[in-house]
Structure formats: structure tokens, C-alpha cells
Image (tube, rainbow, N blue to C red; front, side, top):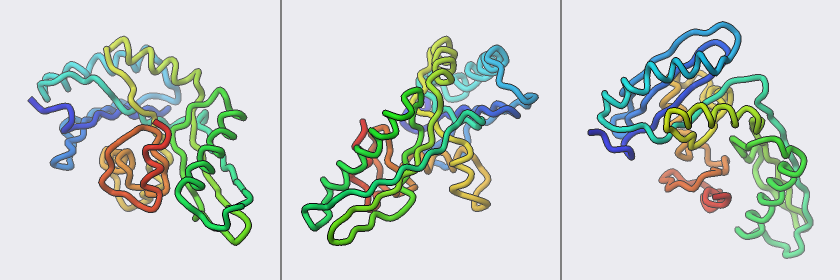
Length: 220
């Protein structure tokens, strides 16, 4: 039996195809990878049938139950918004707490203005700069409507599976460019903290830590 901590299961959804893959985190390869082409629309009945066909096969192959899944989506409903913050720096120096509070403030601005959205990615797109008086911060938010996640959550619940995280397919592919082509490997790396400027919205133990390492646990 393959232990649950040894693999990650991803479900990719777009208007062109559904794809499900199980990624072996120890051996850096797919244990399972199936896809089906669709024609320009996401239909929950067809998606449910696709899951029915593959979940049992996966669980039989790995001799374990799929309890959690990471859903990767490409859809025009995915929202990209950049928010900039210019803040008076009364302390005349930049410490960790000041940065954390500023990130929380930016996140709150997004949530106040886009209450119908679930944040998938929160990325610091420019370096945190300061002069003697001000802090400057720019953050990009990639989000998905609550209404869309509701249907996906319910669908996976019918298969006794919880969606542990939503990720943007376009963001994953754009981050790597032409460097890699295997979606599972790219998603696994970003989900586990590869982008040092991405604030992880789910608490994780991340080995690859950068300048914003303490922010990774901020929004649990």
C-alpha cells in the first residue's frame, strides 16, 4: 500500500479536457494519469462519470483511498487582480511583523472588494522596497468564484473526496514557461512552495524557503 503522504492527486479541468493524475512525491513520477477530451464546455455530469471511471482504478492501483484532491482549473471565470500598497513607515525600518501586517492588509482589501471570490494564489509580484518614509508592496491575486467552487466541492463530496486546494492552470504553466511540460510535476512543485514570493494559503511544512518563509504559515 502506498501511504497517503507519499502521493498527491490532481484533477485538471478545462473546457478542452479533464485529466486526473496521481503524483509519486518520492520518485517524482506519475503513478496514474488519464485524460479525456471534451468540447468547449464543463459539464458536471460528464465530469462525474469521468471520476467514476478513474477513482476506483486509482484506489485499486495504489491500494489506498483518495481522500483529498487538488483541483487545477483553466476557465475564463478565473480572476487576476493586482493590488498595490503604499504605506507610511513610522518605524523607519522594515521588520518581519511590519511586512506580515502589510500582507494581511492587502489581502483584506481584496476580500472586501471581491467577496464572491476564493483566493487560489497570492503572489508578491514586485520586491518589497522601502525608503525612509514609505513601504511599497504589489501583490497579484488569482481567484475563482464561490459559485464555481460550490459545484466542484459538492461533486467531489459525492465521491467521498475533499478538494484540499484550488490552483490556476494558467498560472502553473506561465510560471514554468517551456522549462517543463509535465503538469503534475509543475503543480507539485508550486504547491510545495517553489515560488518563494507566493504566500501559501494552506499551512504546510516547506523545505524550500525564501525571503518570505514566515509568510507561508500566515493565513492558515
